[in-house]
Structures are given as C-alpha cells and as structure tokens.
Length: 356
Image (tube, rainbow, N blue to C red):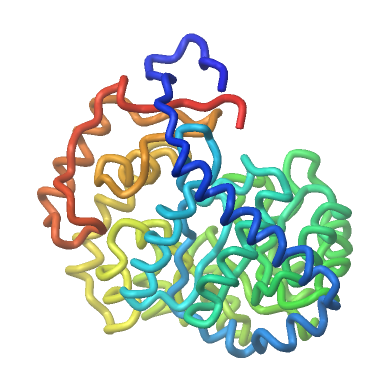
C-alpha cells in the first residue's frame, strides 16, 4: 500500500499474515461458490431462494458496514461478527455493499463475492439484498444477474446518477432489470441528484418483480405510495412517522449497525415518540458528513472494526469524534454494539488506504 499524501492520519501498517491468509482463504471459498452458482440460471436461483412477498414483508433491514484490514482488503471476521450481531437483535434482512457498505469503492468481483459470502454464511437466517445499482444499464444488468446467480433474495437499484437520463429513460432502465428478479428501487436524490417521481414508480410497480421502493424524499411521498398498495421502506430519521402514521413496511437502517436493539424496538413495538426523540441526535450525528464516514468512525471508536478507511473517505474530525463519545455516554453504552469502552481515537490511530 502506498502512503496517502497530505492526510493527518497514519498510513503505516503492521503485517498480519494470519489475518490476511484467513481472509484470502475465505474470499477464495466465496469465489469458488460464486463460480459454481453462475452456472445456474438466474430465475432458478431466485425461485429457490425466496418469494416476492417474503421480501415485501421485511420490516427491519440493516445496510451493513463493510470492514477492512490494514491492507484495504475485506475483514471477513469483523464482517461476520457485525452480521451475527444484527441477526441476534432481530434483523430480518441484510443489505450488502450498498452506499453504507461502500459498494461504490469495490470492484464488481469484490461486490459479488461479498454477496456470495453473505448468502453462504447467513442466507438460512436472514434475507440477503445485494446492491447491484449502476448508472450504466449494461453493468446493472450484469451485476443483477451475477447477484441472483449466487443466491441473493433481491437487488437494490439506485437510479442512474451523474450522467442522468430522462423520465422515459428511467422507465426503460428499470424495465431492463425487472425481468431478472425481485428489484427494490432506491430513491435518494441527495446521492443521485435526480428524484424518481411517482409517475415513474407507478409504472414500474405494475411489474410482478417490482418489490417496492426505499424512499428518502419524505413521508408525504411514503403515504402517497402506501395508499396505492406500493411497499415502502423508509430511513432512520423518518421511520417513526413513516411506519406508524404513513404505512411504511419498515426501515433500511444505517443506525442499526450501532444500536440494533433500539431500532428494532422503534420498528416493532408501536408508536414511541420518546424513543424516537432519544435516537434523533444519533441520526443527525450519522449525517454530519456524507455517509458512511460517521458510521465508520463510530464503529472504530467502539472497537468493533479496525480503524481503516478506503479513500476517498477519511475519519471525522477530532471534535466530531469526541462528540460521538459524549453521545454514547448520554444514550447509554449498553445500547450500542460491542463490549469495549468507547474511546476517542487519535489521528494517528487511523489507517487510510488509497490503493485497495
């Protein structure tokens, strides 16, 4: 790994042969399973894994973080611990390699292997949703076919970003994907810089492989869809009203990486404005910088993952890191994942990887 220049964080690495060898072996095993499953037809794999209605019924989905080794490779031991913690706290679905899981920083081979590993290790306990979105329709089709071939239950698809298309182009893009298998549409204009309007969603919802939509625009939009029978997942800060007043089926959560028990309570146990108010400072802290920067920093300070960042992400500032420690103390350490004391990491504790 090359030193990342002009950054106030350490990039020195202590070699850990055993960890790297273990991760290499696990990735090789995942790759072997991936090669075998690619020989299956996508439709057969989907049929065997799950039904559309099963996916539509998921109330509690975690967009799981992808942890790294100092080399920048996947830390599968830490990843498995994260997923096991989610399952132990009642999560019903795991979203793999979404924006929170940094699919945007992975090669397609890495992304599909991580989906395959998740299916192989946890597919009998939880539904696996794989991010297969791209602003290139050809790549989105290829990733979706590969994801279903290794056994994922549904694919999450953002709309084409940066090189945006027309409304007719959006419909055509998604109509190229829907025949492959169950698709969840992801509408997050803050990332894609383009809203997917109801006029488009209502057309796509007529396809039997349309599962539903992860909607970030607001609860008025959620209510519009649920009144028409369209399944909606909301996000952390909106879920309380979205679930209990607007009919959303549940949440695709980032905060559940940190406080899965509290998020489960918020989604499963009825209206609870007191709990919602308690969680709002955490929800706001998690977006003080573009996600998943704060989440990565938090998990490192809780001792759950190694303090390794793939560029272009870098840790939060010292002041913001102190803010998280104070937040944990105010909310109660017992609500957060892990057993170690939360600590303020110093700049030199972080490893920044630019070639991974």
